[in-house]
Length: 177
Length: 177
Length: 177
Image (cartoon, rainbow over all chains, first blue to last red; front, side, top):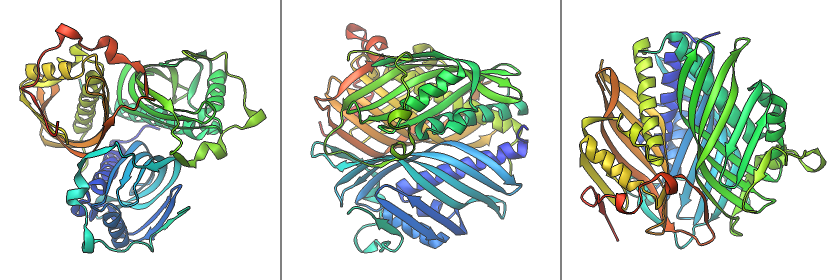
C-alpha cells in the first residue's frame, strides 16, 4: 500500500528528528537536545564494552552532555532509516549507526556500528523519540596511536569541562575494564 | 517535473529495500535476504582486490551468506540515493557505499567506497533489486594491527561456521594474491 | 505544518543535487560539476588544517578539479539532511559530512566530519547550490602507514595529472604546516 502524503510528510519529520539528535550529541547542543525526547523516553544501548540503560528526558540529556564532554570527540552518523507507522501518531524506526569515538581520557579510539530500533510519538503536534535501543554489530577499539593528531576538536571547546561535568556512572556499565 | 505522490512513495519503498539489503548482509539475515531480489538478478561488484559476478536469486543469497560468515565482520552503508523512474514499475538507482570489512581468516582490514548502479522492478506489488553493479572508488587494505580489538562481533555469533559454510569460489575472483 | 507534495518533491530534488555533488567531487566528474552551482555561489570550508574561501561557479569547479587530482583519493559522504524552505524557490539545508582523504603528495591520511550549512535556489526550474559552508567537528590526521595499500584509486586514473593541474593556492590556506 503506498504511503499517504501525510505519512511521507511525517516520515520526513521523523528523519529530521533523528538527524538533529545525532548532530546535537556530537556538538553537545543542549537547546536541541531539549526538543527531542518524550518525558518518559526509554534508552538501552548494548555496546561491546558498555551498557547504557536509562529512563526519562532529564536523565537522557544529562547522559548525553556528560558523555560528550570536552575530553572526547565523536562522530555519530545514523543511516538508512526504515520507518513504519503503527498509528496516526506513532511510528517505529530502524537505523544503522556508524560511529567514531575518540576518548582522550581513556586513550581509546573506537570505530563501530550498531542497529537502532526506535519508537516515535507525536506529542502536541511534534514527533519525539519515545524509545531507542541499539545492538552493536561491529566494534573495533585500540589505543590512540601517538602518530594520530586531533587537528579539530569541536567538543574540546563546546563540551562540558572540569566541575561542570556530572557523574553518570549509574547510567552506564563498562565491561572488561 | 515534480515527483508524483506515487513516485515519492515508490522512492521511499526502494530506499527501504536497499536499506534492508545492507542491514541483512551485515547481520546474515537470511529471512530478509529472501525478500530482496528478482529471480534473475544480475550482480557484478568490481573491487580493487576482487570481482564478484553472478546471476540469480539463489546464487546471490548463497554468495552473501558464505561471504558474511562467522570469521568476518562487516559494516556496509549505502548512502545518497539518486532514484530515477524509467516506467511505472521500473527504476534505476545510484548509491555511494562506505564499507569496513574485517577478515579474520585473511587477517586483512579493508576500508573502502564504491558507486552502485542498480535497477529495480515492481514484482507482484513489491519492489525488488533486479540488477546491481558497483565500481570501487577508494579501497584501503592493511593487515589487522595487533593492537586492534574486535570488542563486538555480531557475525561471530550469527554467521555461518565450519561445515555450514559453502564454497563460493566460482562467484568471486581474487586479484594480487 | 506538514510538507506539501511540492515541498516533498523539491526536498527530494535538493537531496539528489547534494548527493550528485559528493559523487562528482570524488570522481572528478566535470560534467556533473557544471550543473550544480549558481553563478555566484559562495563557499567557505573551515577545516582544522585549512580554510577554503571562494565565490563563483568557475572558481568552485576549478577548486574541486584541482583538489581532487590524481595524487589524492577521497570519500566524501553527506548525511542526515535537514531541509527548510524559506520561499517557494529557496531553501536551506544542514548536512553532516564524513570524509576520508588520502593525500599521496603530502603523505597524510585524514578522517574527519563537518557540519554543512547550505542555501539552495531554484534557477530556470532546477535547484542549485547558492551557498555552502562547513565547520569541522572532528579531524584526525596521521602519516600514511607503510602497511596501508591503496588497492583501488579511481582518481589516480580520472583525476588531473601533471601540467593539467592548476594552481589553487589563492583559494585555500593551510595552517600549522
